[in-house]
Image (cartoon, rainbow, N blue to C red; front, top):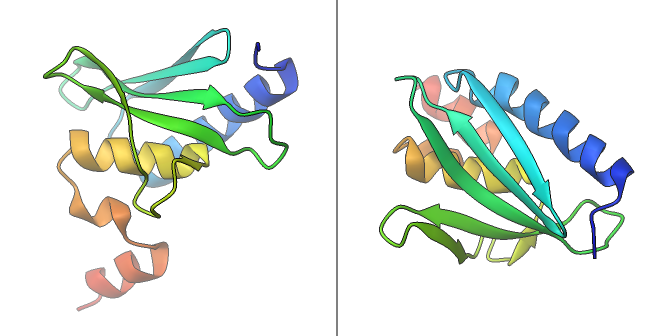
Length: 121
């Protein structure tokens, strides 16, 4: 089942907004669509292009996507559980999880409130 155009546009909009807000050190994030999948890669601060994660369209109107993280060790994607414990989530949750792993940022799995409290200590 192909991802509907409306869902594609919404995914692209949300990914870019979250990149600018939460991951500004990423120079760029791109999505490539193929059937029910959306492959997300980014240009890291050092200029290297890195696959980050893959989302699978679930058909739900609440913008929940199945998540698979890129594993360099297997040169492919592995269906993964998000920090929330769910196999499906938003693009923001997927990006935080993948970027936390890729950029070695343990704060990625904290809520915005927890991150703010940590910075003010």
